[in-house]
Amino acid sequence: MKKIYMDYVATNPLHPDVLDAMMPYFKEEYGNPLSLYPPGLNARKAIEGARESTAALINAKAKEIIFTSSGAESNNFAIKGIAYALQNKGTHIIVSKIEHHSVLNTARFLEKSGFAVTYLPVDENGLINPEDVKKAITNETILVSVIHASPEIGTIEPVAEIGKIVKEKGIMFHTDAVSTVGNIPVDVETINADLISFTAHQFYGPKGAGALYLKGGTRIVPLIYGGIQEGGRRAGTENVPAIVGMGKAAEIAKRNLQTRMDHVTPLRDKLINQALTVENVFLTGDRENRLPGHASFVVDFIEGEAMLLLLAGKGIYAASGSACSSKALKASPVLISIGIPSHRAQGSVVFTLGEETSQEDLEYFNESFPQIITRLREISPYAKGWEGTEDASCTAKK
Amino acid sequence: MSLAEAHQLHNNELTFLDNPIDADATTDIIYMMCPMHLLTIEDQVKEIEPGQILAILTDYDGALEDIPDWCYKTGNEFLGIYEDDDHYKFYIKKHPDQKKDA
Image 1: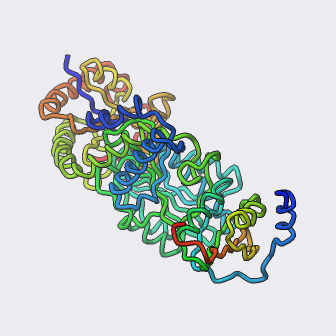
Image 2: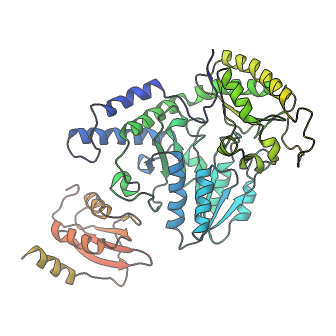
Image 3: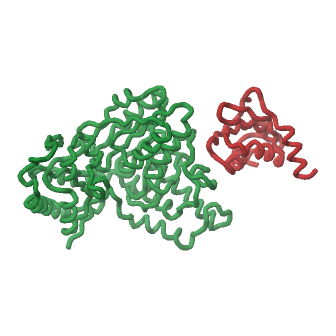
């Protein structure tokens, strides 16, 4: 049976050159980077090299990169670290309603600690209106955090415009760029951000390596105290192989960024156009401002989880969106935020493409997907429509 | 003189300043804890010329003892501490006989 991986937004396969670069640091180069004898110094040198290439991917300075364990850690670090550093200046934070849980839950945690949080709405395409950011800013605002692109609906937010507004007010600006760094151009100069979170496994690097870009001269309260690693801002013996892998993956991503985008964009468009020919299938997220390899839909009258199972039965691996729907059978907050009622949000499905996705894969998918929809609708209690459901209004579009 | 006596002598000389000093270089390590103040001071003093003044901004209380001690041990001149709203500013004058990068 064919096996087609269409869940690049969950994680990417490791690039073979990245694995090769990492291997020595699992084996002979096992030294602790803080040790002052050759094995330690070699590990230190490897980390600093990785810092250079990781910084180069987003046009930052090496000194502005703090290695972490993940995008989630970077998001927690950025938000708590800035909130605590600036709490004497103000206690108001602004985030959007479609942030990743590592941002949303950190904001909720801070609310319990006495901070006030504004959750910005988005339009039906998932776009944040920069004017809403401007209106939400008060004298107490110390931090604005907006996701660069939603992994669930693929919409790319106008972060440069938002960053400009936020910086004009002298407020800290953070963006969670986990879905974008290594997939579309991200440049610290154009984004106007003081902090940017990203992770290696979203651009063919290893899991367990993330980074926080912290603009030079910005004060932050550490999340993890201990040793002097990462300039005392993130203690803990470094995950040397993962960091080396992140550096290598960043180097390759910078070199191949355009090629990768040129490969997945037409495949994505073909997938979207084909899927929308099926009745009552709707695209979620913005059609234009969209991650290059990202196609997400709401398929009416059936459940995303059922689609995933049948797709997996045909060797196609995809996602249904957020963990809310896949683990707790709750409607995704992102889909609710773009105006999709909860009964329709259950039909969410997300396909994400990458370097290894081929034309043949897509043809196989385009053949299988409509068959699965038909089969599930035949047994669906809603086969004849949404009659009897609480809210049958339709906001997603063809 | 014993080390304990040296500490005592030193603590007696701990100087708090009424106003900040114009420094040639400033390093902000606010929210960083031990031993970042000592590593930073060592790195940053290497970057300035003999006779120049380095300001270290920190909120780490341990620095009150450690930075003057470090100056005493390395022969650099400790000029004093200015207490700002939520942090200290430590001023160190690089020993005139020490070369850059020394």
